[in-house]
Length: 72
Picture (tube, helix red, strand yellow):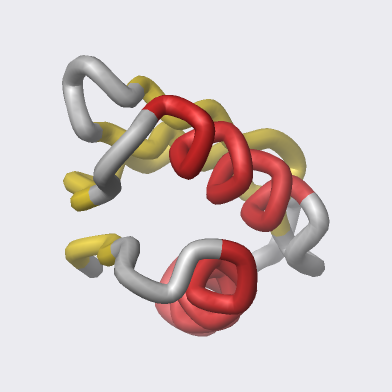
């Protein structure tokens, strides 16, 4: 399953950090952050529930970029 989320991030480098953090989150198969569109596209592993995975993604992203936001 793939879903898109609106994000808020200040720079392209920070967006790359968010993408890397999202990819390392259990339940995430792949993640792509588009800095220009301020969107995060997340592909979830089979059987993963986006409602439980995305709070973990946000937590991991805030560890590397504390002023970022993902609108769930």
